[in-house]
Length: 280
Length: 290
Image (cartoon, rainbow over all chains, first blue to last red; front, side, top):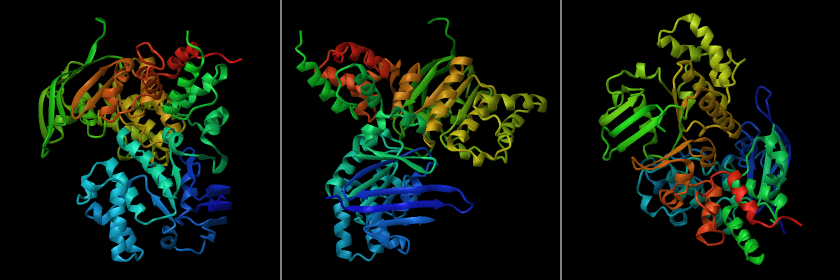
């Protein structure tokens, strides 16, 4: 039974000066979903997700988080439900060591010391930060600093993680760590909302994609549907991952059941295709 | 090819920034020919930016550090010729164009560099509209650079570099701060300059699928050394080496590599790097519909 965790009803946001950044957004996010939010800069993605943790309040319409209207709620209260991991960890990190960074959030919302330590240790284990714990966040590489940014939100134990471009500036190794972390967070029952231009990431992890264009939600469906829809891709100037483009083309004339979202699934399908058709 | 003219020659270049423990570049030997489109790949800290800065003499002339070896740009030794002279041959575009912007209007932004080189006003009036047209910013002359989108701002940085009429354009992760439309625009401008004007393009970039389609040559740096240097097919064919140092290959290359190494399909070498190449081969192997 899906449990709605974030609900937007006729949500509009108009910035001072009259710029309409979001029009008539209707959206229900259920607990445990991994959702990708895509669109060009200025399409309304960030405006939308900033309503989830109260960084922005609706100009019109309603946002409900766990059934509660966010309009009168304080950001600190909402932060316990929705954690926002910034694209640039430098906007988020300011303690002297990784360890202190991980303690700051929970302590700030009044978690007892004993539990602060417990959450810190859990985060260090989950994000594999053992060797970094006593280092200054600015002494570690940018990709790892981004993981620390995610870990510091993890210690807040939010129901929902909003990840803003989690793979930007990551190398291939840390990108794979991010994939694994997102999947593990979901296994722990978290809901993930991922704002990204990285289509390979979203093809790998997202189950549902929300596409924005000119302040409107213009699609809300599976990644496969989104990447199959050439018109939608063209009108939003988004490019599906190379493997999705390849399998979309192949499936037009050949026996290929569907568009594939990643290399490993394509390998498996080709293996069964080529071996089930009696080799010469 | 013997008729190709070397425009960049690097011999035994080792460079170490002051107060660091290891050299940022180690014994780099490299020749780049006029008209080549070269992609630089490597993790953060691999030496891409240092290598680029060595091309216009900023390294070693303006940054504290120690250099060995020789860098020649169109025959000019960067140790002897001032950056000002080198700037006439080589234009640079960085990943954060906003740090380069200082003027109130787009056209002034371009004029500034020209004034510094002492270009007469008349000629500036000819050059400015021309470079704006090249990068697709005509009509935005009076706009503030800071009111441009990320992609437009980056194209303005390209226009400012082009105004000096360089023969080499060096771009350091030019698309890292722009959205997908902006990326398309920047890649299109770079490809146009390379194809139509035979401009040498050197681009540090993470988008391997795009570089596979555009670049003539891929150079991979790891910990200050060049570890791979060849055509996209030659370089991306080295899947194991690239994965080991944390770099991705195009998805179709990865697909072909896996099919081949798991003995599912005997993909002939070279492995594909573009969708078209992969489609060509697979469409012959897969049964057709119906």
